[in-house]
Image (cartoon, rainbow, N blue to C red; front, side):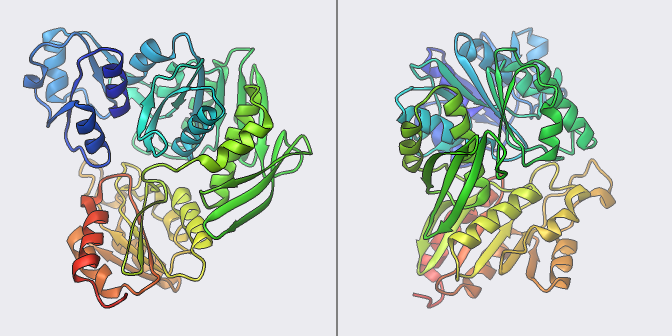
Length: 457
């Protein structure tokens, strides 16, 4: 929604917004853009009367501002409807989908197409360091959008990505997620099958064939399917993966023949596969292989994706968006490889509707194996579901300790901020995993270590 707000302002609209809780980096981004965001929801926010209201999918039907909107008979549309009408029309739509890696893959594709001279437009869920933005109109023919399978709005319960009319759709992975709107994996799969069904015959799906669910979803695709992954018999295969000294290097085979050797600043197998999806997409668009090879090392990363927020008195603080059990596991595997020999502490805040449910309680137990120390914050309870269906940080840490791991749970961020500095030693890497602001824990921890930390220099 923040990206869309900036995009609409850039094409000439006056834009304001409402939100219950705006936190960095998006709050800072909107302030710099000059877009006023009102705190909380109220019919009063609709004065002066706007010409159009874009309703985000966090808004429920009984939201006071939504009630005021319908009563005032002001025209309104969903986020995907607005994006499709104002920005995708007249462009080649490149839609990045999947349970994991959407923001990273979208950001990589935007950056690498830009480096290759194609000036794409994009709208992405994270702030791309290279542009200092998550939205650019672009002057080229391609427009990249992060295609979310979450529902569209209270008046449209279908997945967002169905509105984006992809010419090329990337599917990175398919797992169960969004337990608040999908009852099971089968329901998630049906959404992706609907996406495949609407693909044009002259379109293309770039699919991760390491994932058996993805393979099944695309098997009857009406368009061409470009297969990528670790296996050798694919259209694009990963080889010679090496993660060391803060960089990842790998080779790419196209139909069994060497396509190029690549280097990336992003650690981890999962990030190499995200890059491979982009390489396959760019080749499908006709970009020369040498330009693709040259573009990848120039990528500067994304805020909140393995982002180093600071290094203070020998302690490295990392911010990451991981919250799904698979994403937590893969992120910690990548950080373990990137910071070999250093103690790795994972600080986890379950915040999504799914992570605060017991549906992932058991799955999280094996997600933290690559951390030396685990800290879990007890989440704000989902009061609309029975207590036995809620996630428990106490239970998770108990299960982790029973497996021989050093795990602790705390009720508040303040307790975590008292614990971490007392236990920090030089060389520690503290990875803070949350899809929210986490009470600004990153900056607060850096400040405490800088001013009042133990003698670890």
